Amino acid sequence: MDNILSLYNKNNIAISSRELFLLSSIPNRTRNLLWITNIDPSLVPSPKEVARINITIKPSGISMETLHQTIDPSIIFTKLPINESGSTEKLSYGPSYRELTPEQRWIYLNWLRDVSRPIEIGYVFIYYYGLERHLMIGDYNNAVDEILYLFEHHKSPSFQHYAKIAILSASLYRNHFDIFSRIPNLLQPLDELSVLIKLKMRLALTPQDIADLANLIKFNKRYYIKKHLDKFKELIVEVFPDYEEDLFSNIKINNVPKKRILTFANYSFPDNIRYPEIPDVLSIEEFKGKLNNILKTTCDKLKEQNKRR
Image (cartoon, rainbow, N blue to C red; front, side, top):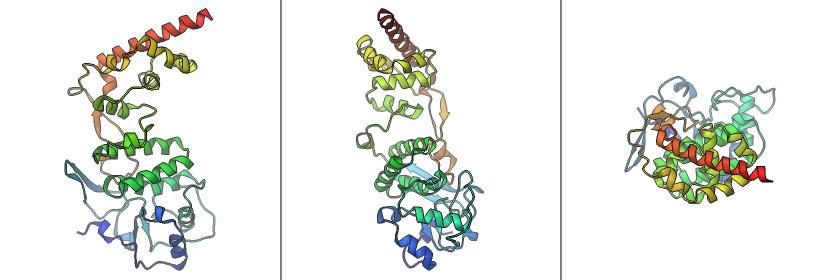
């Protein structure tokens, strides 16, 4: 069975004149990252229906094998109709291009001409699913740039969260460790995955990171920290000048319980890639004990200073 990606052909595809107009007016930056096929969509199942693809990660690189002829939710099927007029419904959760109505397809293709324009976030996700695929097995660098561009113009918390985690995960899988200098704030705000990355790579912990950790472990005075955040960040350096070493020294993660986290929004990815198991750093009692001591001591000092004012 042929890999479905081998059936993609962005040249010489028989499509309608209206669709050709829309596709040809999409900027090269965006058009080069689209997945387009002229195969009959009825020949492949929905990515929601069956096991999709197998992604194998080895030191030599990442390979992909199609288990069944299946599709990515972002794939543009040129044989599906589009209609410029007519009423449109709100998109369903986890939409795909194939499941759109002809009117919704027109809206989507027209939006691709300028992806900075405001639009229902479901359309952004359709495009974004394909960018995630590029992160893993395609044009990584341009996909990162395009996701960052979307970041600037679409402030949906859900989208921003997925995009950050996906860039982090794909960069680790593909050994693009320069991503942390390329996007300095990628690990902020701190979450379970970025805590692990900072621990394993011995990356600097900032005072803001300590405040984020207070939220992650649900520290009982975290709201007080939020209220006096700037002063807390100043004080923690005074009280614990070696807080990074205090937190990370002697922490072993080899035998730490694992926790599954969601790293990609693209539901055509296999579960072992979408939901990897990572060491649950926040469950390490020694780490939590050190962190609680740093937070409590700094908060107590902060309260003392506030009382004197």
